[in-house]
Length: 89
Image (cartoon, rainbow, N blue to C red):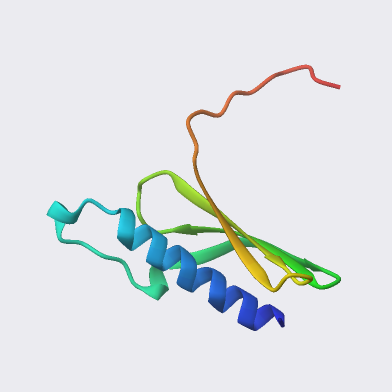
């Protein structure tokens, strides 16, 4: 899979996941323009990308493409806290 196809697949999967998990009583959905790539890379036949959406829900998504098996995996995360440790060498 080329990089353009991979990114399109990732955005489609994240869009579907995010819309399925929104509170239905809000009556709100997002579109493809609301999904963006934060980082991506390709190594040999494999791809990985970190994505997010314009929703203020604290979620981010990791898509991994296994080129050997032709499989795409989605991990959905929510950041709970960010702790700074000073003086680490």
